Length: 126
Image (cartoon, rainbow, N blue to C red; front, side):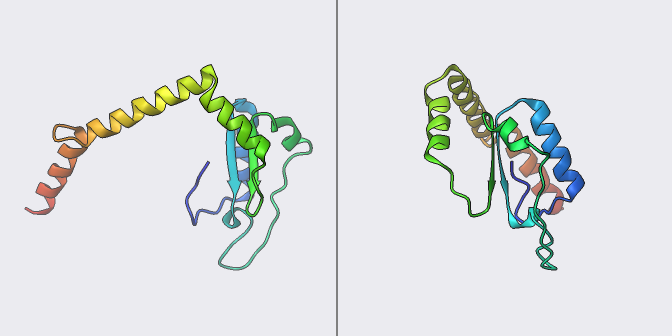
């Protein structure tokens, strides 16, 4: 998950993500950056506290990396095997290809983004 470079989540937002990710039963990677550890402008520091046993409960499908932590070879191994040698990986790659094609089509001469850009340029140059 990515929330941008300067977005700072409050404790309530982090707790909502923690609960939602666990309830979703979906695979995820969440990188906790300095902006999630406190206010980078006031040097406030806080340590994100997860519910007891949370990281153990989600370890088979979720990765929570704190800035400075290394991703283990086991994590890389599992991710590559999932993506490249499983039915789930086949579906993920097919979806990525479909999205790639849709994006390429949208910026072609007859694509919707091209038309939107032309409309915007016509509006601001009136």
